[in-house]
Amino acid sequence: MADEPERAQPVKFRGGGFVSKPRRFVAPLVFAVLIAIWEWGARAGWISPLVLPAPSEAFEAFKDLVESGQLLRHLSASLQRLIVGFTAGTTLGLTVGTFIGLFSIARSGLAPLVAAIFPIPKIALLPLFIIWFGIGEGSKVATILFGSFFPTVIATYSGIDNVDRGLIRMGQSFNLTYRDIVRKIVLPAALPAILSGMRISASISIILLVAAEMIGAEYGIGAYVLLAGNLMATDQLIAGVAMLSILGLTVNWLINLAERRFLKWRA
Amino acid sequence: MDLKVQGLSHRYDDLEVLRGIDLTIRQGEIVSVIGPSGCGKSTLLRLIGGLERPTEGEVLQVGEPPADSLNPLTYVFQDFALLPWRTVKGNVSLVLESKGLAQAETDARIADVLARTRLTDFADAIPKQLSGGMKQRVAIARALSVNPAVLLMDEPLSALDSQTRELLMDDLIQLWAREPFTSCYVTHNLNEAVRLGHKVVVLSRRPGVIREIVTIDTPVPKRSISDPALAEIQQSLWEMMREEAMTADMELADG
Ligand SMILES: Nc1ncnc2c1ncn2[C@@H]1O[C@H](COP(=O)(O)OP(=O)(O)OP(=O)(O)O)[C@@H](O)[C@H]1O
Ligand SMILES: [Mg+2]
Image (tube, rainbow over all chains, first blue to last red; front, side, top):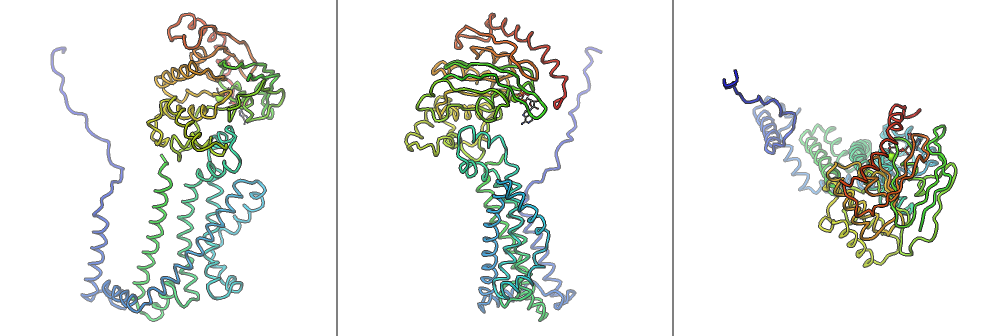
């Protein structure tokens, strides 16, 4: 037995898989194929143009929108509401969330209130806001502000709750001032939570923007989509919806950019 | 500046952690504290540095800390406690900012401590790029930058693998030889305690009382891993701790 060579065979590989690798060309291909089928179906006649117009027609509608100068009007109205409402809501949310995170009194007083108001779909408050702030910009901005305020508050204070106490203790042990501990340790450590809260509040803001514009606005992407629907102008409707998709993607991209810029340090 | 611990006792609600600790840490002296796990070593260190209030007794600073000491009682933590979003340099500068130093002075201090801990080449790295040993060197550099009168170290090497620990140990000994610092060094590693300590304080299991204080006369820089005299001290310390450690190990944490 000793000198008889043992039969040797390579160990069978059974690892691998379960890892998603980026394949760059796939996504554009899927898009292109889908749009091509859609275009072809519409032209061949088995998709009724009343139900779903060809992509090329939606694109024509979009071109009209650009050429007539209406695009700028709708887009700037929407963006203005979104930016004002979101910025104000986020700023206020950060402030209130920081107070709740840092001070027990603020927490005991405000956290239950926030918890009670957070689950209300803010669009239900729009009628109330219209009474308070008028049918114009005020009520729309207020809806978006409210919508982005609450998720930001919650993300901020739970981010602060989860800051490593060891780091805070380190700051105290070096005699850092309270202000410095908050500014240089607590807030940066809560930033990942704050940014993921922002991702949520941004998408809520877009939903609220469109909803508010559909209820009563002359200009804005929501108003444009609603009008197109009422006129059965499905080509314009598709163009409007595509713009919303692009708006959402842009916001998402901006937040990714911020994460990559500010959270490089995460392991 | 000396530190004098007098009649220190501490309890967390019903849990008596420390009882009647008397201890003096003299200037330029390293005092190692060993004891079974859960006996209150970390608590003792937090009390000494003023991060917690003792239930009874007090900790006194005898004499004035050096005038250029920005933070007389300075900690080195077991888990390093570095800010992951700051570079090596930024982590050191964190504790110098808003201390009213001129920018040039701050820069000079940072450059000095980074050189002393051999981190100059890594000044702009962030913690996630560093090995465990380097992270602890950053924490040591940060502690040295404020010119501490006393360094309070809580198991600074126990998160590291044994080779890295050996290297850092040499670093600490060299740092001390070049410029003797005062230190209270908590560890559960008898070898570290014996290699670094001028005195080794042995705590009993919880509630921690001082069982014995062993003085080691061999000068710190002259101690070697293979010194038989040290091995003997280490052995006798182990005998002392063995039973305590075994009993402590059987206790429930909240018992
Ligand atoms: N903040 C606290 N509140 C309540 N109990 C605590 C607190 N901190 C520590 N303890 C308890 O006090 C006892 C002593 O803890 P301590 O951390 O000082 O022990 P230690 O000697 O450092 O232990 P180890 O060797 O595990 O580091 C432990 O039983 C621990 O559970
Ligand atoms: Mg401990």
